[in-house]
Image (cartoon, rainbow, N blue to C red; front, side, top):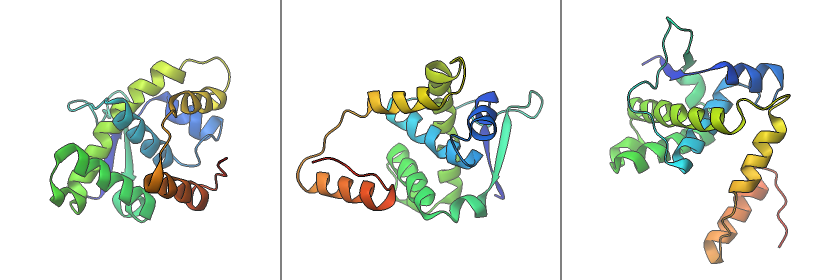
Length: 158
């Protein structure tokens, strides 16, 4: 496999090229996959899009998996979906599951902020804030806080 094929829409252009909410299409792809996973939305059939209607996107496998964080997220989604530890190292399974959940996440994104007048930035931020209700306690809370502080550059209030 040389490419990860995924379903795209005009929302990719809007959030990546027009409004710079995401730097690259693959950043938005990962966001959509996580969104699809979180919302339990996965598309098992039409998840790769079509060249005929211009909904097929492709990302080079080597470039995508060169990002360690994206590799971990994709492997985690693949494992959670299949329950098979082999999915943690099977790039083909990971690419398929990423595309399936991203297609489900794209449906959620289109419903929630795809048709917002003006820029989608505020709509995306508000969606994340409104759906980030989990508070983690104990060791898990310490891990989440450390991850947010170190990896995401987020300062959390205690």
